[in-house]
Length: 121
Image (tube, rainbow, N blue to C red):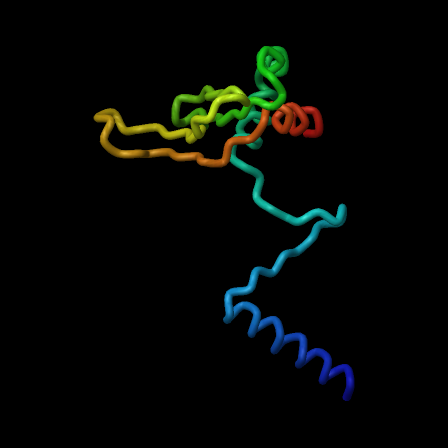
């Protein structure tokens, strides 16, 4: 009886949390929050598997600089912003007329994060 009550209480709590908009965070086996990787990390790890000189290229920048990478189907490449710049780094690709944004990434990561992701792939 107690087990049924506990199960019902858990389900009611879960449903009410979802209905009132609470965030439910699940952790992976390392105890870290599960979050989607920023697109740049995934793009750069994939690119590093094809280009053995990518880490050398990244070493030209400070580990605190921020970077946004673009998918190959959008032309590839990446943009880097110096850590001491006050300008935001938002990766946008416009259509051929320059009127419509067809790709946007507003989640820059640091060069250090990219290097770590590449080395831990």
